[in-house]
Length: 79
Image (cartoon, rainbow, N blue to C red; front, side, top):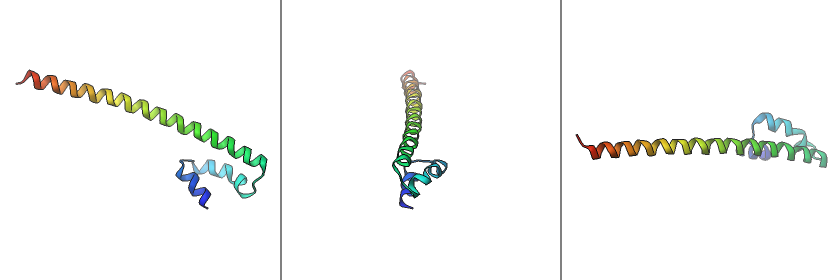
């Protein structure tokens, strides 16, 4: 149960955990290799999501900067 909780905390979907269940219930070298492949795939998925979020944050930062610049120009122009 702790291992499943650890996988859930690591962002691994329950369907993927179910895919690894045989690897956890009756470990063998082959199943350990299979689990490693699955975990590698999940890590790549998470990395892709993180990269996408970082790009979105950068785009939002630019929009925030543009808004600040607009407000600064408006304040300088006065009423």
